[in-house]
Amino acid sequence: MKREQRQRQDDEFSAFVVGSGRQLLRLAELLTGDPDRAKDIVQSALERAYLHWHRITGDDPTAYVRRIVVNQHRDWWRRLRNHELPIEHTPDRPLTEDLAERQAERALLHQALGTLTRRERTVVVLRYYGDLTEAAVAAELGIAQGTVKSTLHRAMSKLRALPELADRSGVTASPTTHIEVTV
Image 1 (cartoon, one colour):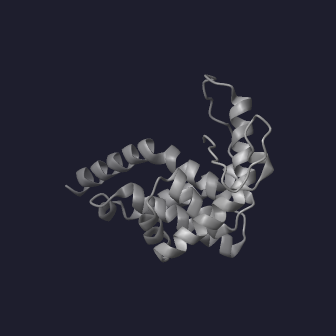
Image 2 (cartoon, helix red, strand yellow):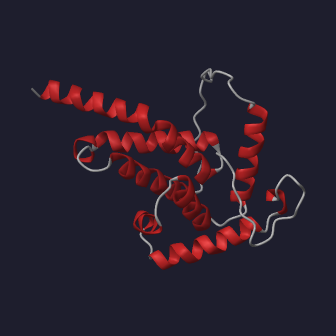
């Protein structure tokens, strides 16, 4: 009986990783600005989630593991250590779009996010990439909702003031300019 139950949990966890792995990886990449470190954080978060999967499946597993990713990033930031693990082969991906343009947009996004403080970056990523409400971001980070609002306001003001985020017509960004970067 235990073997069957363990196999079912393993299957559920594998399905979760397949369904949510890319989303968690993008979240970690936006938080860290480093794809290799993001992979390490997600791998570590998934390891922790796997150990407690029997308790997680009843709740919202994506929110639970997303919180682990944010905490892993916070822990890394506190320790300032690098645990990069090289991989032997990069997985192949089909070329269906202009990768150079997409990479340039991502580089611009990472550069812009790099101008923010750690807290500002985390709040912006969770709010706009993670599509969480301000209340959910506050709960996720353990801070007041008013802190989330003020942090978002400061962060978005900084981002709107960056000249590299001006629209393609050459008009310089102003504090009221709407910024939209596709990730």
